[in-house]
Each structure stands twice: as structure tokens, then as C-alpha cells.
Image 1 (cartoon, helix red, strand yellow):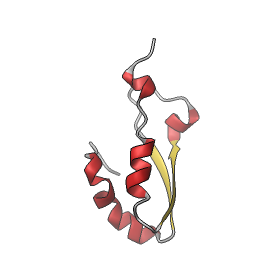
Image 2 (cartoon, one colour; image 1 turned 30 degrees about the vertical axis):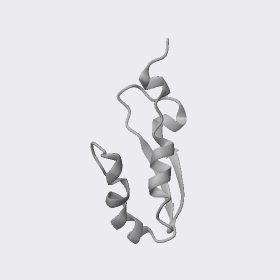
Image 3 (tube, one colour; image 1 turned 135 degrees about the vertical axis):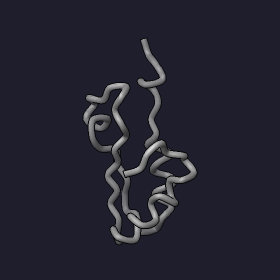
Image 4 (cartoon, rainbow, N blue to C red; image 1 turned 90 degrees about the vertical axis):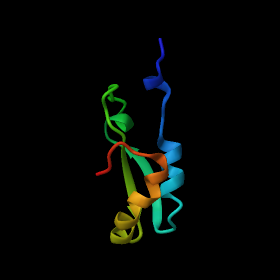
Length: 73
């Protein structure tokens, strides 16, 4: 029996907004969701490969703001 937890995947939306920065080379799902061991309480982890890490780190909150994240680390 499926649930919203089983079918929801934010990867496409995350990838689209983060890849809008030309300094981002790739975005990939990481952590328990990538490993297939996530539970309904698992967070979403992404590995971002930037050409300029400091610049992308500074810009990241603005890039994902339109997705209205509950938290950002």
C-alpha cells in the first residue's frame, strides 16, 4: 500500500533551482534516501558539486528560497 511518503521525491525541484547557478556542476540525492533506507521521518540530503564552493554556499539560501524549506543547514 503506497503513501505520499513512498512517492514524493523533491530531487527534480531541488536540482532545477540549485543548477540555476552556473557554478553548480551537479546535484545528487545522498544519505538514507539515496541508500533506500529512509523512513517517513528522514530528511532529504543532497550532495552539491560546485566549481566555487564558497560562492555557492553563500548563494544557496537564495537559490532554494522559492521551495520554502522548513530548515536549511
